[in-house]
Length: 132
Image (cartoon, rainbow, N blue to C red; front, side):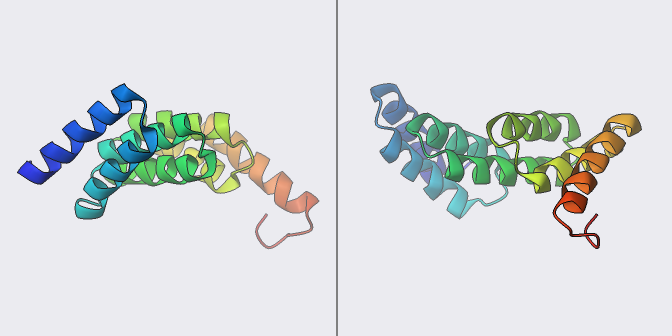
C-alpha cells in the first residue's frame, strides 16, 4: 500500500465518522482513481455514496466492484454485492444477468436459469425479441 493510499483511506474513515460523507466519498474516489482494481475501496465508496443518498452513483460503484470481484474469481463475494444491488435497484437487468453468470460460476444452474428467464421475459414483454 502506498502512503498516499493509506492517508486517503484513513482520512475517509475519519470523515465518515464525523458524518462528512461527501468529503469521504472524494477521498475514496481518489483512491480508486489511482488504483482502479481495488474492489474493496470501490465498495467503501459505494457504501458512502449510498449513505449520503446518492443511490444511482452508489449502485454504479457497487456494480463495478462486483464485476471486479467476479473477474478475480471472488464469485461468492461478487454474488453478495450483486444481490445487494438488486435489493436497491431491482430494475437493473444487466445486474440480473451478471448475477446469473455468478450463479453459473458456482454451478448453481437452477438459480442462473431462473434469472435468465426473468430477463428474457422482460425483453419479450417489451418487444425486444432479439435480446430475449
